[in-house]
Image (cartoon, rainbow, N blue to C red; front, side, top):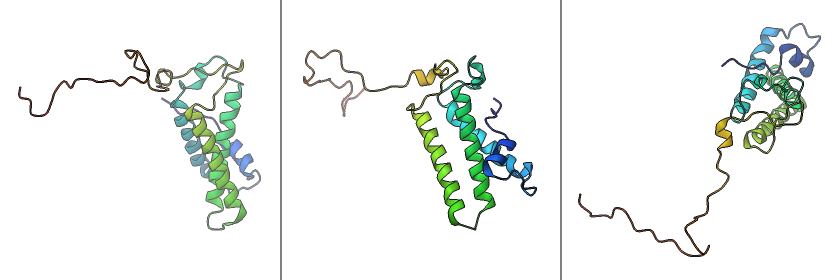
Length: 162
């Protein structure tokens, strides 16, 4: 499975504010792009079939734009942390808070409280495992009254010889 590209070095450069900085080259940005793309894909693949492009209405969808924004924000914030390391201050706190916000959204996506929608507003195709997730415990259909205690005879008891 190849890594899906949610963001690029060019997008990260703009987001991080390093557009006119000749010292921040693509080889410096690229590890953050790869890391962010991998983190986003790892989260998405826990619930959805990847690559997401298998969904016919993925291109130009809310989901595509949302994931591009998350990956770009994550990579740009990690780049900022690296570049301003040791300086402390507001830039570091802001970069860390953006990373925390992205990861909070990823956790919601993974838990199912946030959904990825295609261009028609339909949720993208889920993995089979996500469709089979247990949402609760089944009720015992053998009971006539809900408060009736269940007694089950043990199949094997201690001290029994075979």
